[in-house]
Length: 227
Image (cartoon, rainbow, N blue to C red):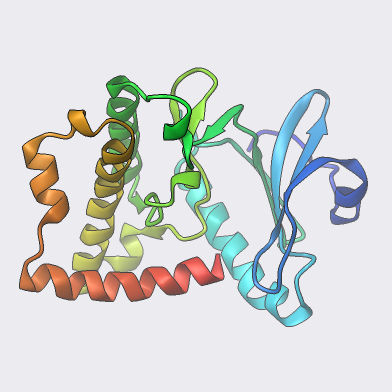
């Protein structure tokens, strides 16, 4: 772990923050921007949530996301993980760039961006993780360097957790979903670059596919609500 922000306390966040990306709600953490020695970081903070929620769901999600970041350490395209504060807040690198949410209204992403995103997703899967929520455009960033970055790993799942059938089939479906999310983004930004094979796979609906999708969608709903 990179020794950054190691003196940061939860009580410091309202005072030392350089901005707040999202205030807390009953079930969602606050998202702060903090700066130390010229380095900026994002803090996902459950400490402002209600007592029971923050000490059950909040601590559980921080623990899971820390596990994901540790598995992905060193992968270009994933923010650097700095530390966890008191089990309730996660501190990660701020990526200079823009969310893909509504970005198609302003710029056209090149095919090279999606090729780089595909390689990033493959690398992540090789580490035994599926993101599970890439279809939400805000979870993919266009870095100022033109490269893709994937953020928010609270809903991710590990291959080790789903290694027993039929859970392994659901894990494979989530991996496929990560790739389908790229196709969805391409359809929004550069539909002419979507191959017939990609379009056919994106629209494929078999009996078994529908069943696995139904199970997957329910699991994703639970993960998203918690995250």
